[in-house]
Length: 175
Length: 164
Image (cartoon, rainbow over all chains, first blue to last red; front, side):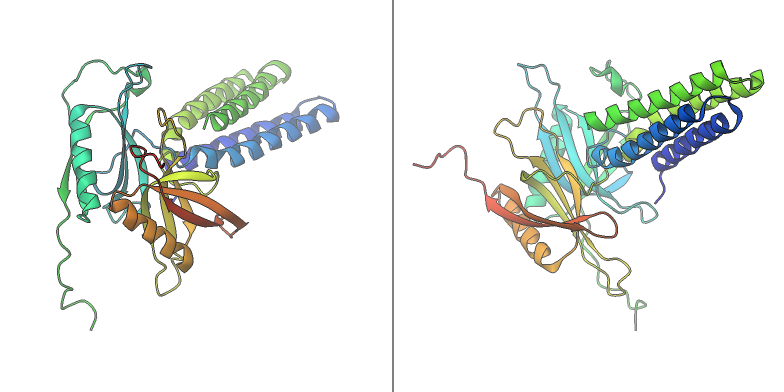
């Protein structure tokens, strides 16, 4: 599935290629300089291509799905010694059938309320009770974020519920 | 992740050098130069904003040799053979000091043998038996660049009760 992220990076590659083409065709530089530019740009392409997987797998702090199937929870308590504010990480799959069904890792800022919600969910997962999460956008302002990098992040209110039991197969389905 | 960001910043630097060359050493019309600046500025911003869109999804490379298993998710192949299945693992690198350790998601090609091992480890995890994973052997990458790994899982000893 082509996401905005992939599309933007592919577009960036195309623009660099166009700029290089213009320079190669219309500038009066010696051929050695033009060859050098092609080599450097190709090396930058390769470096980006191989660097992408290193970005993957780490949790994101955006785009928590409206409804999701909770798969895992990892809670990092705040550290008073180092001043680390703590995080609540969770791993979930989107329940919207039109979206990517692969599990995705998320990060939420630590708060006692978030910790309590997810700790309870983790306990139920361990008892083999599947958990469904639902997100409500929270418009309340809860002070200034400690991490300035999170200024664009909306605070979200997440509730976890026991997943409804799978019903018997429909009579219409199949023969 | 820091190395990946550094690579992207280096790529942006190459782009800036190319742009500077266009601006300083070519005889293009001023509006072409202005459009180049606008286009590159938009692209750098768009790429920067697009980065979080790439985060969170599982990767197929860079699995640490020893790790703590946090969660598993197994997708079995469908009968039509279109979906080949996958085994997803959410892990943290094995460390005695877990401060600042961030979990990372990985995807491995599906195999019945690995499914058995991972499902057994998942069951033990649900019984509150922390699982230590070890990469035993790595095989060549498949068509999607995913490396088939042979993994072994062990119960982690409870740190509250050291062995005598």
